[in-house]
Length: 91
Image 1 (tube, helix red, strand yellow):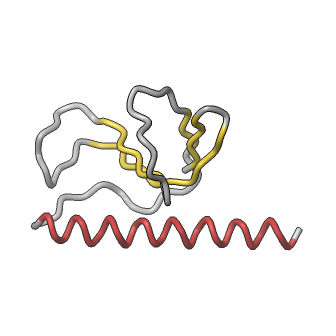
Image 2 (image 1 turned 45 degrees about the vertical axis):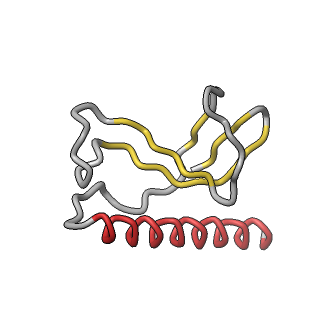
């Protein structure tokens, strides 16, 4: 996904759902992780553009398993953006 903040665009990954492993939500929410981003943007308005789906939301048996799968998802997102960049450079 791409996220626009203050006219700048960043790459990221997102989850839309109820966080079944944590089990604390009834209504779905959007959680966003920006790649290589360290700024505090709480309270800022952002625009999110979904680009590629990695997987459906699922419940994991342990928090360690959840964390490992999130790491894998982020690596998949990085690879996807890398492929898109390589494709754009060839045209």
